[in-house]
Image (cartoon, rainbow over all chains, first blue to last red; front, side, top):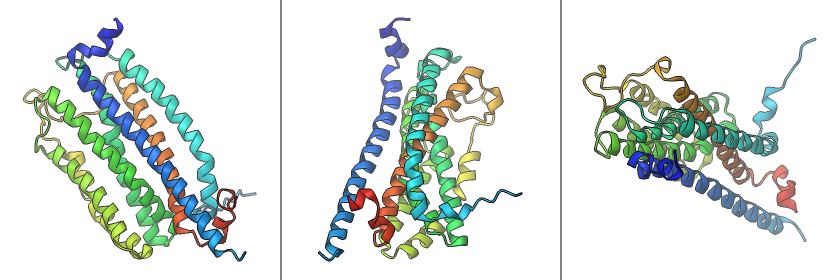
Length: 55
Length: 249
């Protein structure tokens, strides 16, 4: 089986790769969103801590 | 001599937060390894075509795992919420809240990959067949849970109200499971049929189970990461949070 044959999936390539691709894309996006959320939360906590700490 | 383990030790957010942090890389590594094996098996070790199903049948290697995970994560949320209601443990409710977006994501992906499958196999993106319809309602339940959580400001009340919604929504899971409307495959090959794990070809079953484990391990990664965020947000006024190295600097 050649590489182009593999990717064409008997003419159903678009259906197969969009299914797997969408899953990969959304899973990656989820991790990136959770990570950026963490950065925001930690930043806010640091600010809270500075504000509350008597200097 | 009996070995005593204090199970309640890790029920406190303060001790689970660092433990979750240590577990994440292990789940990520397990997920990557399982995806590598699962994808290889799905594309190279399983038959190219399946009787009258052409190559598009490979979609099941992602469709079945994400659908199972969408339903499984709902059950896990129900269990954590019930534990929260019974034992009044804060961490259990946080666990439920951390699971919801991942469960909704997999339910959505189940509907999306199912629609793509439907287009090739049944010639339509969507049909109001019992299984499709009940699975769509599962997505609405996830969204309803998240909306309810954010609609009530008091965390204790929102936890309890949304836990109740989850438990009532449990009624949907058996409906999805038994909503197979084609008892005789000879009459309708297209729609969901009754199937048993024993009837599936060995390589196909192995690929499907490996992919399911991969998706499961991924869920642990995203859920534990989100749980850590939720813990920090909800416990922001506690001393132990202020003493964390990432916060105190």
